[in-house]
Image (cartoon, rainbow, N blue to C red):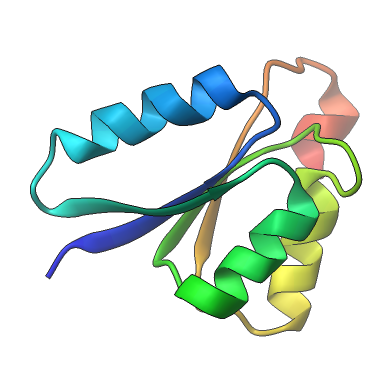
Amino acid sequence: MALKIAIADDHKLFREGVKRILELEEDLEAAAEGEDGRDALIIDKNYKPDVMIMDIDMPNMNGIKATDKLNENKAKSKVIILSFYEEGAWIKR
């Protein structure tokens, strides 16, 4: 059974790159993708991914707020947040 992974990032090129890498592994499945935190919540509800790879800085709802909402909703998805920010406040949160 493949590990279902979803991607939420506002950069389409990044999403496509991650998806292609995931497709190279037979035990990983790119279950869904979205461009912001709102999409991440919808993806979680509809696809129930095992892992959500999420950008920290996205329009409409950022990755931190989306992760907080997933935790409030008791989502089973584990979240991996990606960022180029080096600012301590973002990293600590």
